[in-house]
Amino acid sequence: MVVCQIRERMEKGEESLAKAFQLLQKQHGATPTVSKSVDDEDSGWQAVIYDFIERRRQNSRSTTMKDLTRHMERVKQTLAKKPRPQSGADLMRSFARQHFKNCPPGKSGRITQMNNVRGLLRHAIKEFGYDSRWKPLETDDLRELIGTDDRPTEDKLTPPVMPNDLGNLLDALRDADRTSLMLLVGIIGIYGLRPLEVSQLIWEDGHLKVRPGGKRNKATRGKKQKNRLVLPFDVPGREGEGERLVMLWRTGTIRFPQTVLNRINEAEEKGFKPVGDEIRQQLQRFRFWQGLEATRSGLTPYSLGHGCAYRMHKSYDRPLSIRDAAALLGHTPQEHHASYGQWIDEAGLIEAVERITGAGRTTLEGDTLSPLDLHPEAA
Image (cartoon, rainbow, N blue to C red):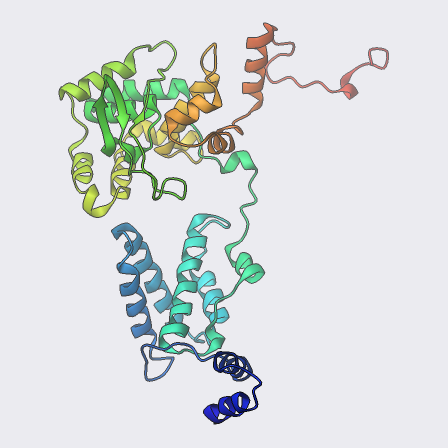
């Protein structure tokens, strides 16, 4: 019948073949390009999920596949729970109710899981011919499931390890005879590295540098990069410590922890994430770090590098410019300002103004003063 309608339009001279076909597609509803099939939609999800995972495996890292596989297992749990979802919207809402209880709103955990579920639903429609009711949620409905991170902006930032805390951490590691971990933590913290970048360190032209490849994002993907120079920003009063640690590393006098070296040796095959994961585990087993975590909410191994950024701007008589700091830390000035320009607390403001003006404190610690506290004649 469709063929007859196309022929009729063409014989009347109304449309070309392509145009007539497009109009009829729009009139009757476009049929998806189906390359696979299942007996019925309810029982076919196992096959759809398996095919979706295998398709993604062709272009994804092992760490990405690990997350995707875990998310698809959660989809299976959602599909098995009664009442069974009967549409894409049902599935996504049920998935969120079951699996987002311990996943903070508005953050990457929810976003990644929702993107994977949406990808599965599109795959089911396109490749297996599932009904259009399985289309995933979009725009406002999707944002409602992901939620909004409503914490104050400063609370969202990964906090820096403060200068004295870094010095005390290195001393505690040395006293505990954890010299391998001390070497690792010291180089990360003093040179402002991301934890995974220890797998990319080289000594070149008399300086410590980081080879490209550890950090992948839209700005770096597909671009040829040179080795990035990194320089030490020692804790005030501990000058020269960074260079001494690098000398110990270069000469092999002290090596990184063996488990970290194992992950570094596997990075080409398994990616860089296991390197960072191992460093995190090593730190979280150390009692002094546990104490820092208890007193500084949100502290992570990335806080070591953030502490270097903090010292660049806060700890020396002449703060480093944003452009220079960004180059040493391996990102753009815009990223640097967005990430670190919001580290402003009252104590830091007071210290900065005192450094510039030479003015001392005009109130006692803990005192507050407002116009209502003044006598009428003083006001």
